[in-house]
Image 1 (cartoon, rainbow, N blue to C red):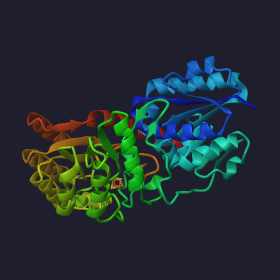
Image 2 (cartoon, rainbow, N blue to C red):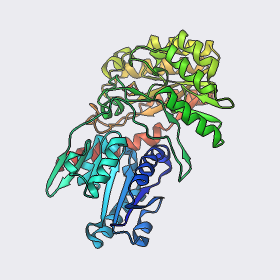
Image 3 (cartoon, rainbow, N blue to C red):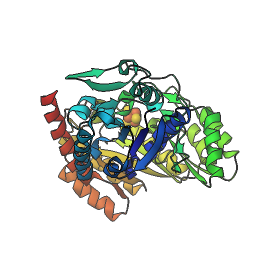
Length: 426
Ligand code: SF4
């Protein structure tokens, strides 16, 4: 029997998504004696050097900004050299939003053997089975791989439910926010989320969420964060909130006792059109967070329409007013340098940001990044207009400013260059 080691690359940024991957792997290893070790490491090269495995599967979870990190680029080159020495006994697999958005570049430019698109619960066990010879790679859903000179993509599959990967790793004691929702039915043109899940939304069953909350509480974790692309959409059709379902979820989890629940703040920010009086009546009773994070993205109705947000500026104001009325501080996100942004859009957005900051909102600034797999992937990188910089200085003086727009401006340029070069090789 082959000795198989699965090496998972650790990075702080991926800590929470890795908890889900590790839980899938732990479950898989429990049923396959071939898996000798699962290793979580920052230093993949050292593991390669030390391992006497017959076969090593090395897994990375990648977000697009990470592929420009010098350490990662260097490590991938060295891993490639190391595996050439060991011939075919190392298989490099990439997952995460970047692999989903740019699978071909992930193979041809970054040097991976297989890119996993979409979610891992079904794909990872079947992929491992196929690597171990129990199935053919072409039967594994949601992957892109190299077959000689060809790049092969297998069939797409989005399961109808979120299928039971736990949000924590028993072995490595990583406890991620509990994912209650996956996917999105909206179509903001800069966003990878709905495309990865093919515009489908699924919710984790309340009983399952409750079981995880119990496990967290027993493990000493008293503040439990929920993860959702739109925190107040739980149980809905993705278009209108279902306060009854949100209440059932929160009430059921709170019955566990001494835990505090976080919903509507990182990592379950909300759309403004889901901040309704009925929803606020529910969340105010149960949640621990005193801030609500709202995605506004622009202060221009014209631009909001163009980027496909599906709400207007008035809706942002209504959401903000409701949050304040119920005693929450709104944290409002804006994206600078969106494709098609005009001077007039900038001026309108500046006015809205300053107005919201004066009302007590935190303003969180982002710069537009052309992410692969989105309708805006070929658009120019976002530039922060000088009028934004001036407004941001004023908001900073009010102590109401957050965000990484400066760093994102540099990353956006790198992503743009990378994707344009990519087009030339594919
Ligand atoms: S930004 Fe939010 S609402 Fe828009 S598509 Fe992405 S997840 Fe959905």
